[in-house]
Length: 580
Image 1 (cartoon, rainbow, N blue to C red):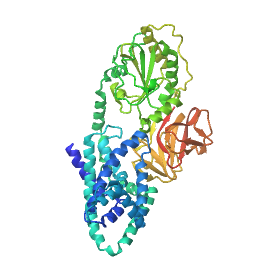
Image 2: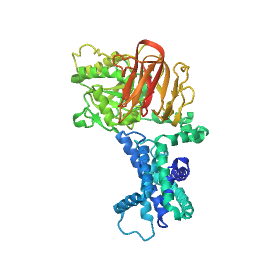
Image 3: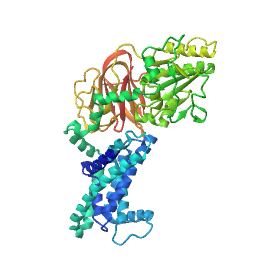
Image 4: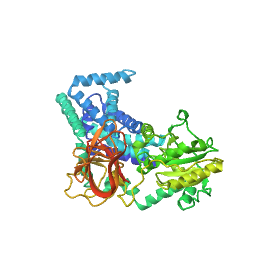
């Protein structure tokens, strides 16, 4: 913990000297150059405090509410414009600062002090500063925005803010000495600083700052750009992560099942004691959405289904689960869908509730955002089903889609053990099966798992990939074109964005999202607009994208090989291609 705190302090100071902080410097210099002798100290104190709050609290809040990842950046642009206009119009700046001062003043400030007014300005600057350094610090202190907040993470955040504040304080003192020579023209200097801020905000709105940072990053060795990512991708680190996941309470029966110890439906072995549903979040389709426990389900046969709503293999399994729920619930079967997300947007309770309604699910579903149940079972697959008998023991496990008759026979076997009779014939739901034959493998668009890209490889940041090449990529390979903002798990389209894929499959799906505003995506097959097909999300060559989910783009009569071009409207985020 001490080493991490020291690292955060040094990293904060380094961040304050990086090009990313340029948007903050004009107003910081202008604020520190005027007022009492302690005003610069007040500016950096307010900045450190509000920056810590913005990074820790807002990162968690934005994730919990399922808001866009770049919300902090948008807020920063708005604050920059407000501060810049206030500096350009000095009376407006005085009125804003006076109004804020009344909110926090408890006693009159000492004459010529300037500390408290500096704190107020620094608080505003912290929210502008957070989108620059926030992603770095958020990764250091939270690992992911979903993890619980601790005092240790607050200490690290404060250390990071203190390091940044110390470096900025030195800049302010130097700036004060410089600007004291311009005292006779302080009004013009302040207006110039305000103009610079407005121009910087416009540049940020046009993503010119991130393009500049990306151009620098591409010229540096990869171990200098992202050393932690390089470390995590080593074979030793990956082996350690797998070892860690393997040491779970339920890994024994998961290993037994995957090794072929599932038995036959007429003689199902005991694989182990079933873990409970601890560590989960929101429940759906239960009375008043209250949590269920295995203790209260004792005496019933329980089918635990691991799924996530943007997984095509999971979606193709849902018709069978719905049919089994309708046919066998009265005979003693309870299905519990454990929704363990793959992408950040799948953590949103509102999104999961919408997916449950869209797919017509009536059995209980629980959010497993922390992978608590997933790890307790030692699970590694979407979808995966575990059957629990009336005594709370796991008796059957199946991974992936298909083999549905065998799964249903296992259900019927445990229901017969319970004493159920007259079960009738097997259910025959109308379900779409995976296409026969080899197809292009699942393809992720974020930098963390990007594979088989031709040309410039995806790396985090904003980049213009240039125009599409005349020749399509080779089979199962992808190519970016135009401007994209690449994150670890997704890619967000900018002006002229396009994505090209050479695929072999019958159906092509793409996880897309445009929260807050519906956007269109142009879809071309071998250069021609895609015509509408039954169940497809594409009509007249375009798909309307809003809710973050799996969109069906291509539906062919058989497995074929084609070139798919996707041209999203700016602001559309894409996550992964899947095929079937």
